Length: 288
Image 1 (tube, one colour):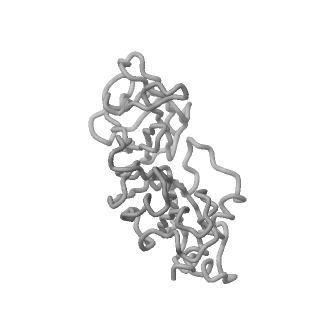
Image 2 (cartoon, rainbow, N blue to C red; image 1 turned 60 degrees about the horizontal axis):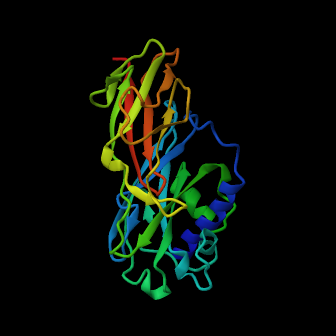
Image 3 (spheres, rainbow, N blue to C red; image 1 turned 180 degrees about the horizontal axis):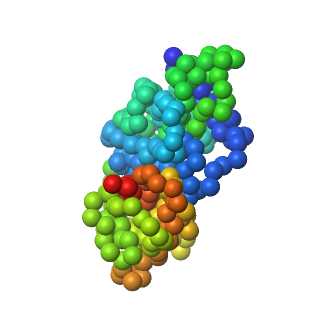
């Protein structure tokens, strides 16, 4: 079964590279993976990692999808050079754990010898999340090189998890603390129907600004970026930012114009640092 799953990885990645034109980053007009979060974006050998996904689709989406998770260590591939492409040409040597099937989360354990066996001080593991639309048979047909698969029915998302020694101070996920609408903090995850343009702001806890070394080997704050996506309506900017010590008045703001038609919809805010950390919140705009 492993080699068939890896065939999915190879062929589907080719489709991903040469696939249809990408959707607008701020709109959900088709099935999308908005984020993959590792509870430990930096991890040590022997530790367990839990992966969660943020998957969404247009409000009128009536299809079904089946997630397939793969975790690959390119260094474990014979002759591998540590790049993602190394994961494309092997019979299972670089696959960590058992593939996850039909679940929007996945757990794996980093091998104890993940660094020592290859003489490395650090390395990257590659997480691959494949969404197979319609039925799992579509995935199986692809894996078996059958003609019965539809290349338009696959969505591939990639993430990297960094493996470092236990002595290293590790990066952690930022915590998306508060969302503001017209400078008023939103309590909960549901807001009432919007009748006109509003301004949104987001903030993380101060602890999210961990230190990293810049090109001059000097300690600087991590960069924190927010992504904004909605299933309906119009968002002005895909990205906003925050710096340590900013007040509400200083935060970047993003404007949102609600849709003209009725119906509930969602707004996603995703916080990311520049070292693999991620957190997110979902706002549901209800007409009730």
